[in-house]
Length: 621
Ligand code: ADP
Ligand code: MG
Image 1 (cartoon, rainbow, N blue to C red):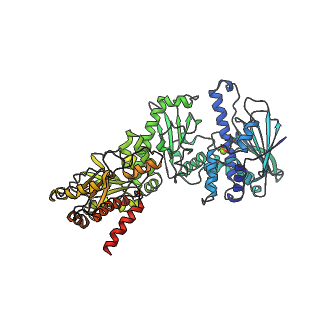
Image 2: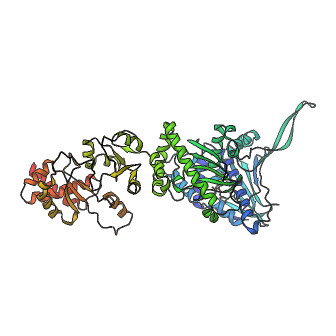
Image 3: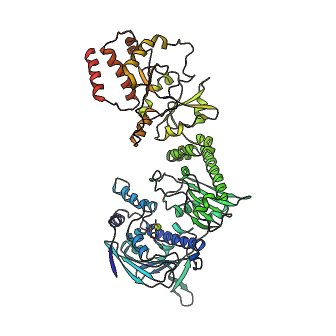
């Protein structure tokens, strides 16, 4: 027998699980059953796809055995099993990045929520909420030797050779005080039905059954074995037979979530291709949705048989928050990930599924606005990612996405923005680059406010990248207000062109600011501020350039903005009238620096800025 210590992270995790995550100890059973179900899936998969395993028997079942006297429960499966090495690495260390994330989340202020256990798949260790000793006996498919892994969930574990007649895994739990409540067959049946009813494999419970015997007039105990779960592919039943509760329960059993889903779309396609899809939208965006390790997505089944968890092929990346099932009649059972990528059947299922999900979302938006608001609060951003990659569905995505705007509180759709456009207004305008508060006070918005033209406030970090590629919504142009070219909507026919009279000042400013600016122009977009900066049409904005540099793209040349000045502003008028001197030079620089500051661009040389400011202050005090 060899003694080993847990990896430090495992010990930490065990401490957390045992001391802070007590709220639902019953999930230990869900976790162990789902491990057994995974192990059965894996065995089926290799027997279908790998020659070496083709001849292995596959008799899938999960057996729970309760011994009320000894206060023990075993969970046995006929799955892929583990050898010595597997036991050490899977049950003695934390190999999964998801679990590390989990630990990081918990050590912060994050809510200590047992929901996280399922979400991050720290599954197996949850058994120590209810056990003071656990023995795992496992034999890997295709191998003769079995191994026993024993631990009390404190410092480490022991491993020794063992025997097991067939491949698979048995987990023996010695209940602790907390766990004793589960030494009860009713309770166990209830928990299995609650979480694991739709596991594809039969789950049997063996226990002491008491039955009333009429002749002897007393209840008699006998050992009984009964199947506890439905083991039915619920998604293959007609919608009319299914209740909301069925859908919710299935969702929880396939995702390990606690919360009900927000809504779901269940479709059966017949004809050319036959398949069933059941898609769920979760109530909340998972915490790791934007991390590379995020695991979610949908499961692929072929003729009710589980094939694999989301590979990127099933739905596009931006819909990764959608959970659920695709079950096809037409794919081969031994389809591999590599084959999937080129599979035509899957490609058409995927295209149709995306269309279906988006059109159902449109229905929700039209018919259940409150539900849609909940949805968009969580998932607006992934939809925006779709704009970037999914050209075919761009128009639909533009209709689904919601925006902040200068005209309304909360969020608004482009359709509504369009409906609010002023008579003769040609384009829809938006401002990107920075936090909402910064954008809302940008001098660039002044003229739009004055002319009562609505401007969308795009404050998501991906907005500029995404929207700079989108020129139109339907027939209407979409334009960024921080780009140099001014739109027809801003030109005032009645007003004479003021740039001619301003020319001497423009020349002076250009001479003073030198190559810090690309150009200096008279502005038509300012009302209250003396100056602002804009970027060229094809250039990333100042903020974007800043971000690119912060991301290490140091070779990007220092941004050169175009400075626009307001011909009607008092300061500008005075400068125009003033002869060249030190004061007008200071003023020139301050006009540029304040415009940069208003756009959230940090100054290259704050010390000089302050000196100039103080010189000017000194004159006026
Ligand atoms: P997860 O299931 O999310 O991977 P767990 O902590 O539940 O995390 O399990 C850790 C690993 O231990 C599994 O990934 C699997 O490799 C292995 N394992 C656990 N239970 C079994 C089992 N019954 N049969 C085979 N392998 C198992
Ligand atoms: Mg697990």
